[in-house]
View 1 (cartoon, rainbow, N blue to C red):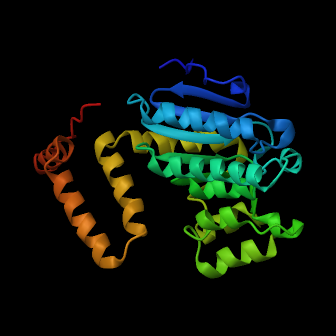
View 2 (cartoon, rainbow, N blue to C red):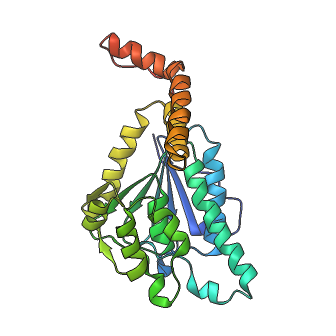
Length: 269
């Protein structure tokens, strides 16, 4: 399929975020390279609009988030934050970012972070909050707010749900960078590849996801996050109901029939 630009995001700052769709994969590119793709209010606004549109777009099977230029995302725009008039406006900005991160979880489509460079503070949070992450071998990660006297409280939510407590605490308390291989070892990313093969590697992962039934992935993703926040008894109860519902759905019936018949499944898109 030829690459086509999506409909324009409905705000004047759409240029800070680019969307390109190609054969069921929507690539969102943070487009503030001179600011290392820092999350300004306008970029957050654009991300909200794009994620809302994608959630309702059944043609999109996988979402990829990456950055323009040498960075993935350097976190919040500190210059912009410094100009905010008071605590209420500051709270509104962080609430907007937190709501955007939760939209990534709520999306029915799996989301892959293609980490092309540094991912710091809320940028590290963004990589951690995506369902999957592929990092270029020159990528680096840090929750470096503590070095400015600002503990990375909101990034801690995503980070502590990806890493062990000790490793999450080390990143949050020291603010030190870890490299891509360490991020892989610690569970922050799924794969590391040469920088010039990043999007190729992401495309291969996206192709694997696209080969699975859309409805089953959406159902499974929702269950995955629900059960993580529940006690074990509630998690098993929810999972039992979910898999029973999944088992009688057309995708699963076709998949089981295909397996028993020793043929490839014929899933409808």
